[in-house]
Length: 320
Figure 1: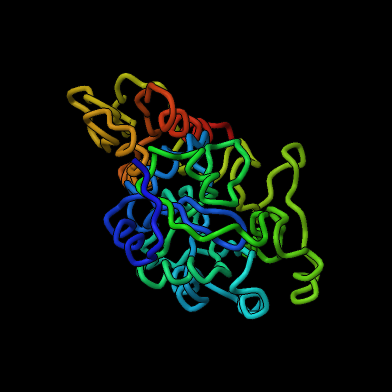
Figure 2: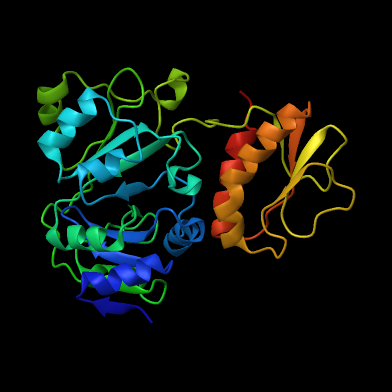
């Protein structure tokens, strides 16, 4: 049963224990989980029925906390000063010492960060003491929630609690701006108008469409079929690995496998989702070091998280 809470400290205790708690921001209610807890992040995707492992926005109580996880530049500093707390999300290069789960960033080398302008959300973020990953607190593809009642209608029984925060003042998701490359690219319009951003840092570009070819500055999920795949080619639906292949296993692995990484021997989809990106990175690095030619991937059957895992693996295996 999903509880309705009124004390941010109680909600923070649940988040630190790896539970999911929805909370109000000035934009919409977010479905929060400890961004440093792999299984909690995987549970977010599971609760939403999210079909892809899109990067999640990490929420912080202040700019200093946000910039401790990403590398800021002068543009980021100026925008944070102008619009934080507020409905602006910045996509920036991830620090090498960041402890945010790889799954929260969809395995990319960037993170999406923001500081919400809502007193209860800020109280929660201060109390929890860790970055909180939080997409909108609704089932994937549904209308975003702006009241606690909306959240309970969507996710009641699927998450631990909802922290009551009243009706969201903005009611529209945050603007997402990519600053990870040389320019500034608008990935999603939202609560901060583009014109206001341009008044601070100058012209802002738009991402290329699917048929416009690849762009090295894109950090948005789903825009390209193949993005940030391992260096080694990926072979899907493998029953075993050849002598020149590393094996990404799910469930009982074939005997005699050489270099391998087990997503979940028990077939636990949440465990597999939590370990997916770490497994791909490990096999890519170690397989390259050993001179292997490919990564063979065992099938991941099922729905829900399995669909999301298969989607990310298909993108990793797409022709480049």
